[in-house]
Amino acid sequence: MVEAVAMDLKSQINLEKLPQHIAVIMDGNGRWAKQHNKPRVFGHRNGVRSVREVTEAAAELGVPYLTLYAFSTENWKRPYTEVNALMGLLVDTLHKEIETLMKNNIRLQAIGDLSKLPSSTHRALLDGIEKTRHNTRMTLVLALNYSAKWEIIEAARKLAQEVQADKLDPNAIDEKIFANALSTSGMPDPELLIRTSGETRISNFLLWQIAYAELYFTPVFWPDFRKENLYEAIIDYQQRERRFGKISEQLAK
Ligand code: IPE
Ligand code: IPE
Ligand code: MG
Image (cartoon, rainbow, N blue to C red; front, side, top):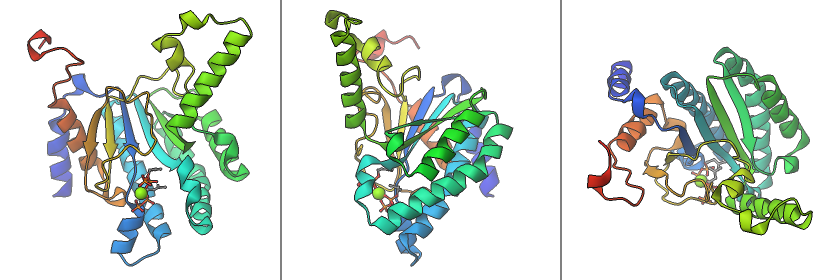
């Protein structure tokens, strides 16, 4: 039954109009666990299946870029035990899933202040990035110790240093040069941003890159998010008119 519903939804997707980059704020693990009378970590552990499902579904459809917000710079403020459990879960998951990424020809990348991650997490991540670097079907980007404001400041600092070293004319700085100084350099901007768990905020995620993204909010908690939920989001996205400032009549149909 569930399979049939998923297939039906999948068949409604126009593969010619897929978002070239989908970004996801995976939220609601803690509340999901609470609903099941379990500790918060139980929610994080169950969120791994959703990561697998969404990655597989996006790759099967042919979405070129998928970015998942896994840990924000602000998340360090959580209780130490939760942060520790999350970092451990990341290491375990990376170790377990690299084979699957290889099998599915998926390249792993990461954005965020990675050097501040615990060394075991950092190493597992760099190892995964290195092993999958020649894969071509889809790029899976993990946002880890990520904050958009941090990223924008880093870019500004980098450009300022180039100006100071006489390698860049300040008047030459345009959108393209600025975008290339961000950690997402070379990636298309997300066209669809999904946030689960009913929260309708951005929480310091990809502020520059989502300037024209379509936003999709669902009440579903992340550990319950399945392939069909991704299909629903893409179908919703495809029904929208993206005007980019123009009026309807100007858009080529
Ligand atoms: C998202 O779920 C996972 C991370 C932020 C790491 P939460 O842990 O934020 O779950 P809620 O929002 O408290 O339910
Ligand atoms: C955003 O979720 C960060 C991630 C999903 C990694 P949070 O649960 O940390 O966001 P707030 O605190 O509700 O804004
Ligand atoms: Mg949350």
